[in-house]
Amino acid sequence: MMSKTGSDIWSKWLLQSRFGGNPQQLKSVMENLYPARDKVLSNAALKENEVLLDVGCGDGFIAFGALEKQETCKVIFSDISKALLDQAQSIAQEMDVLERCQFLVASADDLSVLGHESVDVVTTRSVLIYVAAKQAAFREFYRVLRAGGRLSIFEPINRFSDAHPSPNAHSSPEHFFWGYDVTPVKDLAQKVNEIFRRNQLPDNDPMLDFDEYDLIAFAEQAGFGEIHLELQVNIQPYAERRDFETILRTAPNPKMPTTEEVINEALTPTEAERFVSYLRSTIEDKQAIRTIRNACAYLWAVKV
Image (cartoon, rainbow, N blue to C red):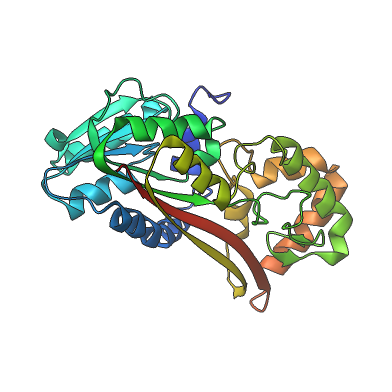
């Protein structure tokens, strides 16, 4: 999928709009991701001289972690974005690990560029949320794994999260926006959230059409004989001082516009000024408390 500027949405989001173009925000994002990366690799149980396939590798976060943790392994970087693969290849060259790497343009549900039983480990992180044909992806993971091979994935369970507003039982109350109580401008928040909902309808959007039980079923139906899943759910108040302009320039995922773009689409100039003014004062208040709701699942399985 390409943006209006010609760059694909995946590289644009990962390299810019994920953190609003703010290097400090990027640092914070990455620091929060390290535990997930380490857990995915721990569950993968990568051994010496094995081949790991990182599906939807993005900028190589999981893949480079594998290269560092197991110095004799080889890693196949796989992604639908050629721009991100080129970025990863440049990093691999700088790290002097290029001879241990392979780079393939492929989607998670079609790994036909790889033969049957050609890798020892398959990893993904926040990839299946963008894949409509999830069962097909699991079948491909199973197909390319050798006997005894391991699958290790991390996926957000967005049905539970308020990061993608949706009219289901797990959504946060309508007087909340970004986890903040915005009761005085609730009418405007509802208009903004409606645009988010239109972009990602909960009944058919890949980011919202599954939960942890579906992940187990996908793995079992693909043929995996040993399956484990760990669900993590968090609802907690959080005091956080965030840069408001960075938040406005941030997009929640590659398929969505930035928050500023959504506000401008949903509201009149007068409404937008009122809404942004209230949000700014709330977020920049050192005493403001944000309620965070999120859930994620770690699944690991063995091809027995």
